[in-house]
Length: 143
Image 1 (spheres, one colour):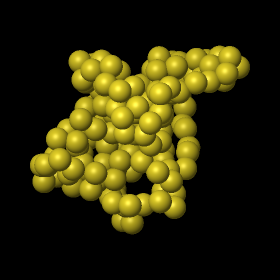
Image 2 (cartoon, rainbow, N blue to C red):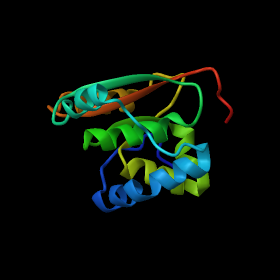
Image 3 (cartoon, rainbow, N blue to C red):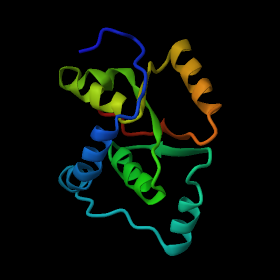
């Protein structure tokens, strides 16, 4: 388990490839979701975002949104960066945090002025083709 307050994101290609395989199974077992489908117009609009800067803002009332948005990134054939609650990086003795960090998540401490996280976010937003998924807290916080 990491003792650092701020955990930087990266994109580990072998781990991301493994997650591409595992995510549909995980989504099915965890949330009983068998697929993420988009109509043709939505697929075209999402595909048009490849190689462009984008910020996806979505509500986060349950724990399922992350796996659905991971499926959305597959339609885009591009990778998202995520902000994750710092406490989530400690789950499973820190193993979950390692996976999160290497698949594009960086930590943020909710309810504080987390300067390292905001600095990393601002820096990442300056990159020409960065994709950010920002999950605002919804109404169903259960952990």
